[in-house]
Length: 455
Image (cartoon, rainbow, N blue to C red; front, side, top):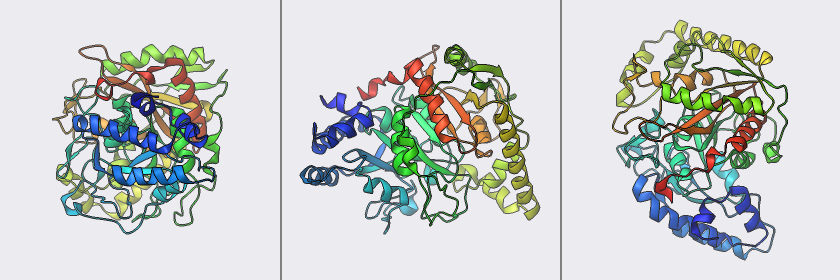
């Protein structure tokens, strides 16, 4: 394989080639280093780069006589708010410009044990607040399909790095939309698993179930491959799910004959840019072809906005209004938000007893100018704040159900830009969501389209 073939090869294939000694870990890491050096200056996705450290690890792996671990020799760059021992972790804030953690996050511990080699850190908004990836430390990351457009966030550097072949996969976090949104805008896969599927430690709030950690990859199979090493229980995370991550190593093939799914154009009335609707409507027939029974339906999301905005907190100039609202919150309002969230969970649970999956848009509009922090309006409807345009994702967040963004197509006018489909599954049926996303992905093959920036 040449450098390009290595960098865009499926992660599972690369791991198998390294494991059978048909290619060395050193060759793989050298290829990704060359890709980062060539492409990253155009998009600014990887903000801390550790080529010599990664090469040293790869050479040591090649010298070992024992059978390599599951993901041995594959590179990763962690989101820049994930603690990495001895490696600068800034959260995109000048306050932490020179911060070097003394311990690794649990996902770093797990992936290191699985043989993954750290290549650096990926860019994010300051304190991961918002879905537009720029910060005062490293500046803005750019969409590889059109560098004048946004690619979302907050796991933005991760999605761009994967889309450009600088990484085979990456980690990310998702509170409102931060795995699904950038994946949607970069033609890659972003999976928000069920809360507790991937443990969070260290964490200032061990009981948090609003924000989760998950994978970004070019294919659903590679997302599952990374998740197999990330997932599983940990006593340091009291909300972690007891089920082993090994389930995600199984085949994703499944028959969907007579599987009842709900198709929702706008989640019950959200403003939708017609360019998004047109792309997704063209793909609706795929599910019929897979044998699904497709019906138009949407859950009742009453109270989702109030619950999310009350329970979410931020630290960023653009959301001072949110902080001020938080300071005014009474115990009664917080209790009401939790009650609303409970009602939303049960309404979604009951909805998905009739339909096994909900199919809906990831984002309400295609990528917009990177100079805008958020779109002022969608389909003629004004946005009240920087969160409003993410309702198609954060309404799902508050229900605690797993959701994935999978490539679905490209807009036509005025220029081709990625559009993803969001697949929502039953509570803790993460594997089922991956199976349907895999079937859709294989039927469309949209994922194979690469940005010119990464070629």
